[in-house]
Image (tube, rainbow, N blue to C red; front, side):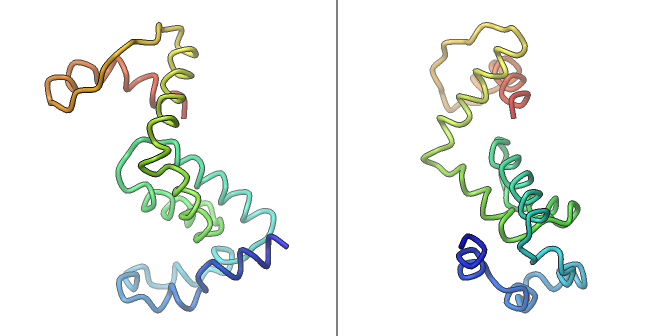
Length: 136
């Protein structure tokens, strides 16, 4: 059942390989394991997709696609799983990451109010950034 459902909604290898914007990759996209749906490629795809979902960085899908190629996992599934973190889910996900990172590092959880300014970011980057990136 899940295999048929995934095959129905994921793009075909031919469709992705025909995209002009991806021609620079050459024969990399012709690797069959990037498109197979079996327990090994799907497990690796979940690893890659969820890993990049929890990393606060721009262009998560590009990182997930590159690592999917490197780990030989299902490429479309790796990229789609990154969409778990979207503008609605990012604040709770990243706050949870921060709290777990602070707990692992045995640091107190800081009470802070977000202010979109360079001064606030430069002052709080290390205080918040280290626990945030550790917990992914």
